[in-house]
Image (cartoon, one colour):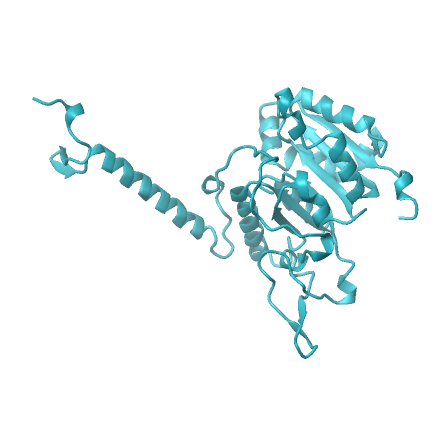
Length: 314
């Protein structure tokens, strides 16, 4: 007599007197049902005013910043249309064949030849959260700096989609609020100068970045001598760069690297006490909250962009 192991998975079996599919078919049906339910709930999270649920936007804790991802990138900062991200701050217009300016809907994808009014030309993103995760920091910063445009930049597509849906829901729940924040899926290690002009950013945040423990992967770290030169280029003189980690070795690495760079100097203890952003470094993000719950240690390195020879006449 054949044992249970010899019975094909596709054969019908009885369980509690009820005919059911074979084990393999049951598993496939369950997986398909689960995926369908998850997709339905993701769509339900897009109902007006309903916040998305993180469990339906699962992704790896970190992503390889050196890999090639498929998303559009502007050739230069002036090519990027921010009105799609901050519609309350911009009235987007395009020139018709007759030379008349007309209101148009934002162009999906971010890159456009839209023309904005002269008083809107000075509206620029001033804060950038690099590797923003689920967007906790920009959400907390929004009411503190309501007239400042800020963007979270995230490489993982599912996570950036979550932040996008979160911001949309928050705007619908509280009209007039959270209009100054947005999220952008991009690779900050490669394309920051494609989005930001020289001296544009006033604050940059690097909260709990991937430590890349292996020495051969240290080149992937978001704070390095080469990348600091890039950050110095897009930061305004006097701008503040914030870093925090719960990995002591990485904290020492970031501090040593910043100390060695001629265009950055550490803030004094008095300045740190007065800065409202410092307290948010440990409380605004999921990672920071987890470290705090576990009573873990954190290592901050907060530096000011100072003037250098290349800033003369800027």
